Length: 127
Image (cartoon, rainbow, N blue to C red; front, side, top):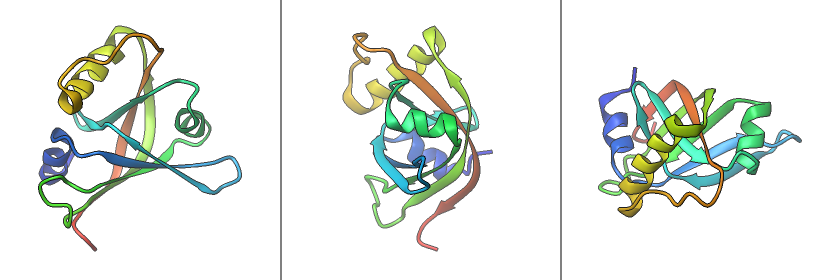
């Protein structure tokens, strides 16, 4: 279940930084649009992008979000990618996220997939 403070941040338009594990064990981070989908966390990417390849090999991940309205109360989510969505179900989520951040649906020129994350740990604030 998502903490209400975490859900509030996910419902806003704060950019998240996703951390994944590279094949050599070192960290890889990248900014992503992020949101809630039920009690899960979602983001989208290209299926061949480094973050997707990392997560298909090792589903462990962490997200760090500095809320736009209070960047000194960060949110950190650790968990695992439990599912990948494509096709129409993915595009519904992609358009919702893109509209939240940019005001318009995501262009259809490239293949995109949605990672569904099961949060295992949620932290609000410095701790």
